[in-house]
Image (cartoon, rainbow, N blue to C red; front, side, top):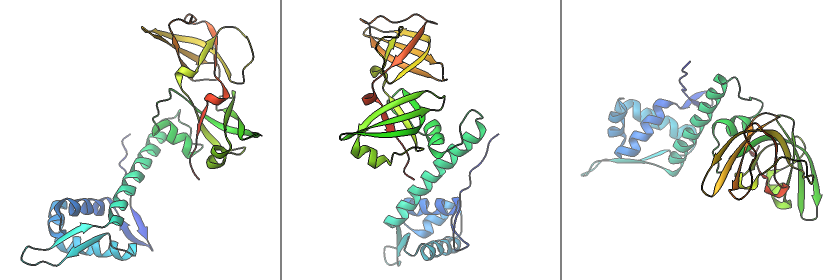
Length: 258
């Protein structure tokens, strides 16, 4: 099912911004005048002038400034506020598109904005991303040890600075995204020295390279984790049981400001 997004904003019950008005502003910026912008947008000069007047009035500050015509003709340009309005409208459009994508994907979690953004809008260099909920925050000198519960139920521990903990507003119940880079993950096949972050699973694939091997482990809790290991290290075979291990200091946390 294809859904068209037509985002409009109102102020005091009056239309402020719509796709048609956004197009007009873009054309005014490109053409350098209201008359030429109206022509490019496919509307009359009077409709364009009335729309600009309404937007300036509702915003409480000008989105477009114009100069009276003379020997060289009149001109118009977007103010800094007008430029920012176009940018925020574009961002809102991206958020709405993510919401539509989430609506049509039955496997997507709709429990929070972070869940939707991390699934449809967030790209990072860290191969391993886990949606989690903060369970505990314990202070250790100038650092904090943060207990996390992943969506599948597994437990993780992250070690971050006190300042980072305060900046992220971490507290029990807070939703976060836990990131772990592939080179930081080791793959073990035996229960050796206990580590705080030890996720069990089954080896799904091993991709061999000249300097590194990439191991994909299908986790018991659901999902997978990727480890990038030097070729000098032995790697388990496909379908072999194994554990993905990494230290608390190797977990990066991200969240949305609310």
